[in-house]
Image (cartoon, rainbow, N blue to C red):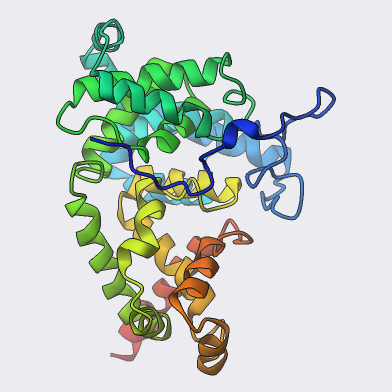
Length: 342
């Protein structure tokens, strides 16, 4: 499958200046970029060390008793994912949540077998073209000789061989890159397979029928929960695919401040695709919704589809980490109040 050109700014990323040697990456491995968190976008809650340590111990206990928690205490798993998985536990937690750990145990030697094959030349060429475009200011992806680009190639090539009916799609690379930032290549590969097969099934297939269907569902949710935003989008003939294709295909890795990306991914691996819909609604509603902007100002500020789409490109720039959790809590309170009144 030909690579989708979803990155308008990525045609000449090789010209990006490399950071000076004295510069240090932020806590996530980024040098100065849209993902760096050394400025106002550093929204990570500064939890006391004892709280972090307590959460780590809880996660360790939960992973050691995974079958019990997922079968009888899933609400506890969900709540802890919503709070944010401790950085030290993400590698293991993500593999357990998506099932990559268990697939790896069942398919020992599979990655090595796929890695040894040459792959479809067209897929291999497309993958190589995209390697330098993936988070070029992250420490493991900055240079061609860096391990990150080499391992990303191995992972994506192996997947294209395993799933020849899907092949390679450009939007796969950011998701695979995110996994490689947190775990070894073989672990990332099996986690990626689980995510593509179970969470994003059909998203990267030719024709993109699944993403088109989910776009209609997203607009249906907007019509219900953010009617002002929905009417402005439809009035300017801004369809779902224009709004949410990159968001959903890349699981918001290209859209949000990095702390938010990690929090969304924590919840996504636990709760599934519904998280992407919730994030999409929050982003659009926080930008175009009636509680954010008046109808008159909305029409004045965004008279055409161009201005509206430019605005939505930056909808998540200053989003708080807990925005999605706060939205969930508001919905829960509304339901409780409605039930009480009835």
